[in-house]
Length: 320
Length: 109
Image 1: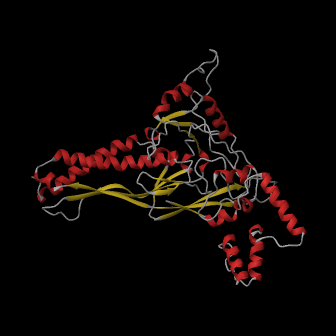
Image 2: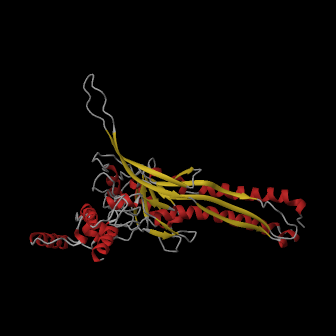
Image 3: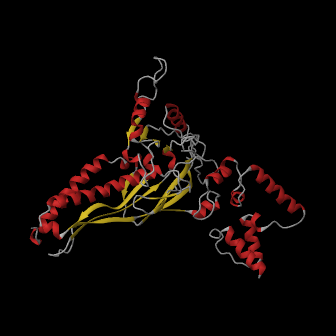
């Protein structure tokens, strides 16, 4: 029987199970490689996008350097949400030394927290065509970026002018070589709000497991499939493929296996943000009663948000 | 959870109203067809409808009549509000819909 005298050793044991599962999960998570994951002390965080920082001019000898001019861009405020669950060690578990059950409960709830975080990251991509959605925690959340347009749109705007930019893969095509080539080009000729070309190198292709085979054959083969033998595949070596299991199905159960995305690995963290006021952690109960359940808890505070969306492109494969 | 600067987005014609983004059809009207935000807010989504609406406005003006409140710009509504004795302290925070309601109420009273 596990008694109150065993509380400290049980807590050590539970924490080691938590740490073991967390380590394994973190090593496999893909979302944090795309999101700018950072810490904050604030409940609300205001994110400002500066557009059109320009000012380099031809300077004559002795002339003062011109001051750069900036136009305040859009702002978006992200508010922290609190998530948590009790990890119960029941009286039965203690009375009958059910260590396996304790281990399973801790493993399961720890996995749940990391799985939900990862699904929430994936859902930011998968609901990128909607204004709002019900997230993996069952709450309705906005999926609009700072310009009041959904993440993937042909009509993104800035405060500078009515010119818009597009990060919707034109026509929402299924994954194909032609679509990848066209999207890479769209990134490379991207213009900032001042009309200056600011190339976005879309060097990462993100697909669900259903598209893994097609993605590798399309991007990594030496020669273009179905073409003459001397027709080289110029995409080879330029694009990294990331297979993200959480893209297969959205949190509402919709089959999203045809969805695919291209992003700039060096800039995508300007588009996607994840702020933690408290990273997931396991806490032992402060009061331990000899005859009741011992309620350990896992909780965390965080929020995901969309910044300047130009560095990630998406297609839902619908063809429309 | 996120919140946007809706006041600014609406004022710049980049959102339909506070808390309401443009729909896909409205975005097309705004940016592909170049129809002004105020007209799109009144449900005008095609070039033909916009031309007809513009001609209608010109006809009303030519006949020396006043445009209905819905067709006035915010600046013009602010002038009307002032004429009606409504004190608008923060014009940036006041929406066109609020101004129209207040002016209508004042005129009907």
